[in-house]
Length: 102
Image 1 (tube, rainbow, N blue to C red):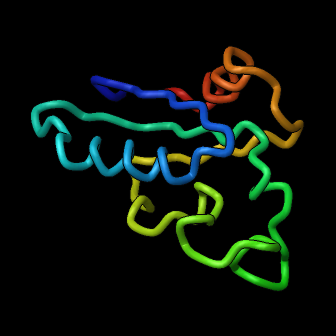
Image 2 (tube, rainbow, N blue to C red; image 1 turned 90 degrees about the vertical axis):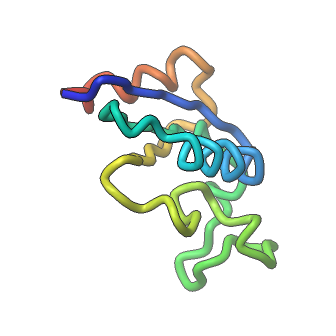
C-alpha cells in the first residue's frame, strides 16, 4: 500500500501533463511511497493514434504524443489509464482508478 496516491485526469493536455509529471519527479518525497495514476479522458491524440506509426495522425513531434507514450514516465510509480468511452467527465474519469488501488 502506498502512503500517497495521486489521480490526475487530463484531456488534450499532453504538454501540461508532461510538465506536471516532471515536477512531481523533481520533488518526489523520498520518505513516502507514492503512485501516480494519469487518466486520459479521451484526448484527440489518443483517438487519432495510427496503429502503423508511433505518432498520432497529423502529429509531428514527441510533444504531441498521447500521454501513455511520454518518454521518461515508464516505471512502477506511474500508471496511465485511457478512457475507452471518450470524455466521460472529471469525476467519472477518476473512478477508473478505483479498481486499481491496493
